[in-house]
Image 1 (cartoon, helix red, strand yellow):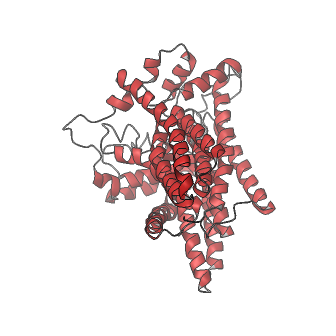
Image 2: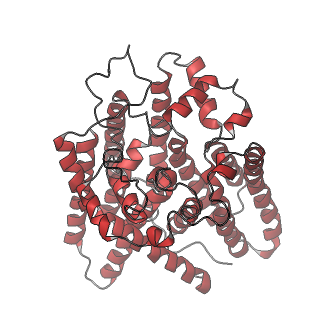
Image 3: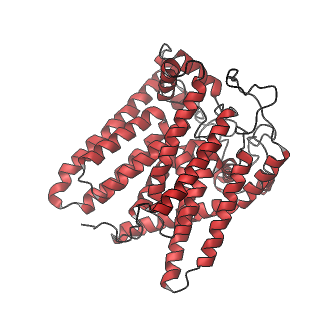
Length: 467
């Protein structure tokens, strides 16, 4: 049997940790509340979601499965509209999403603490994950993306527990329930099934005695079969009605790819234009082949690329009695534009670290399997596997969909929890480097303090243009 990893990090919060994380969480909530006040809940495909919320449950299920979003969004929205806030149900939905994401962040903090030992890097990673714009914005936008972080964090937590002790019926039940909820909230959660299966198959095979493997293997099979069956039923319904996800979105046989692998994997010289923080609509950054996928993903992660949190025009009422329910275009102030230019440039460091950290931990995972030795923490291993599982369906679809640019398949909201993990793995990789240097009596404490200050400055930039 493979024992539990001997390089675990303490995951409990000290009083100072709770104070710091509480301040981060309160700041993010305040930022999001102001975003809701400025109609930040009105995002992409808003009118489609609004009409289906208003029509649910009378809307035919065939119409629901034509969409790219499972019915949970419309069921929750209809419930709030009918029983909680019939007049201001949009704000109420956004507030419900905000509360769920604030709670999900605390679970994510716990997983970060299990992946990082250095307190400066823990605090830096937590602050970046809390205030990075794509997470803040899509914690309140009325779309299925707001479900993803809370559910992903819970699934990761249960998976970590099972990775350490596969003989826990309560954890298997919790994992199955969360995965099933994920399937009815956003289809991307199906990518977690093979990742969870792989991770927990290794745990059952290597961390249980021979006589208990079959019993808990059957329990695990049943637990994962339930969400898998729910997803297959949904795909069956979508296929019957010729839905977007199963039919309409894909290139026809023989049609050339619109976004090729060079666009997906390699930077372009034109990406230098992204350093001026262009806007989604005004500058049409979604034009076919204009920028590379990595460049688009970077700018949409660290700026308010669609201006969703920018103040509305003066002609749009902002008092509680006259709230808008229609999309409208916004413009950035000169100050906001300047801050976003600084953000897109300063955060190149974090994007580079995300790539390096993800590749580093992927190599460590592969080596750990070959050697049957724990070379990274359980939290880091599980987060990497689940993030890869969530990310792969969107990543490998980019060259096969018929409208990847204008359709917005490159936007970070589609892979929100996975991208948050990748950014965090950059901090975790620095932590590993710090630990190695400490063993050689060269721990760069001053450098870590400087990096923490740099991260906090980046977070202040985020707050500056989102507020």
